[in-house]
Image (cartoon, rainbow over all chains, first blue to last red; front, side):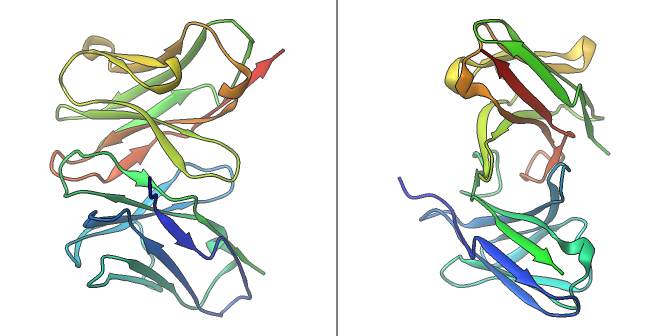
Length: 113
Length: 114
């Protein structure tokens, strides 16, 4: 079965650079969530989208922005990168905003040097 | 605000032994509770979830968890550990009834000794 696809798998950037992470949800899933997992930390919710509209917002820095496109894929844009942004960024998708299960991608590992 | 506490950042058991991973939650509303497993360099995989139906929830790979409201607990168990169970386990609570914004615990790394 198709899963959530995230690209790239690994990304290395320097401080103050920008990065764009992409997430392709499971076909027919209309809801996308972004989580950030720092080294040795639990995943922290960043932001979510339902039907191309932002549905919820967590601890997402103002330097970050995200959107969901008409084909339901989502992109997380990160500017003025800081060392502390180094983390594993997970995308998850679900069908609707009820309690259908979240399906997580394998994540994008961002390293800021 | 809801929160989750996982007791023990590392748990080590022998192959074939009982696995018990502890999770306590704090919530002002009836919670929706989840257990996820994370293998190295992989995403989070749902093991099981509690959504106010049966208090004993059975999941994949032989895991199960029991919701105990009086103890605000949702401990994860497996009768007999297998080497392939070695991974990081996260307990999570859903903060809103209508959304899937999850609040995760700190995680428990499970090691299986041969």
